[in-house]
Length: 476
Image (cartoon, rainbow, N blue to C red):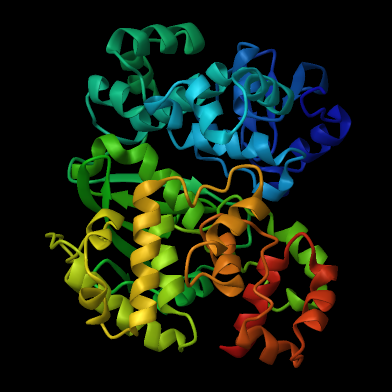
């Protein structure tokens, strides 16, 4: 198998028209400048003979092209899991993007995914056209480029935050690939920098219904941990041993979300941004989804499928939501955060708690959990999920086999089909998950029989998760 082949003529037409549907799905390398760009770049259009097209940034950098300073490939939207011809490749790509290889080796990641080292390397090469190490290096360099452009972090801090083991290795990689040392690049990159916080833009493919996203999250948040204030999403964050806060709202400069990150989270920035991308579904292709869903999506083509900033908290929220109203579950979620979350200081009155950890909840008794207002059976389910996460922190990492991952979830006491499908939608970011047993979906469709609902939803494959979001929207 060869890496994905792109039709140059079709790609050039998309480049000329600055077609946002393909932003982040392919890049153009321009031989006359040695630069590669997103297809929406506002630079002067290159001649066709000078253009070569690549399916990802790593493939362009492998051919010696440097990232454009104007369109900034490092903030481009990514790919949805369903888009790949190979789920395993995308699952591996996501783990690498999330920094897995900063903690473990390629053979260890292969073992974690249940495959051989050789097979992992072949899958990455076939799908992305580069080796795992090149994919990792490109991810680290693009992260460093963003931090050099948008922050005043010292170069040494940026090196470690980007995943490099030493400043020397960082400098060598940067100069080899970009033909400048990091300090020289920072002087020429410009960018907006502040000292009291970090601010980054993360791009998406329009349209994006921001207010609909906020309404969905606002109804399901953990009070004290999350808040929606003045059309912005705020939350506390504990990641990599660092504690702080973020605020997310639409960018005023481009089709992007502006992400403010507290200075305490400096070295955790890459992980924070990865989770923001997932939470707000920034890899979605709304026009393609709307085309499949037809009339169902027509009133709101920018509706997204919210993911998870943290899989464990979505799992807890899903269990709390079993067989009770959304409003009632949110009330109990606030009690859960109050009972098991640690206090934290932030500049926002509504943010005062860290999300409870699986380890802390796993150490509690069923009686202590039941005090938040749940039944003893539900308390045991919350305890079981927490203990399962302690035993296997990758429980909510689906890997290549979504169906097998859902079977593992349903093996946990108290996790049924609805909960597994909901977690597939949000924790796994699986766009074809569909909770056919959901009462709201039954009401929206006017169909009671589960088999008939599943048959009715076949026309929406592989975007049934988005169909569920649109059906729920009709009931709001």
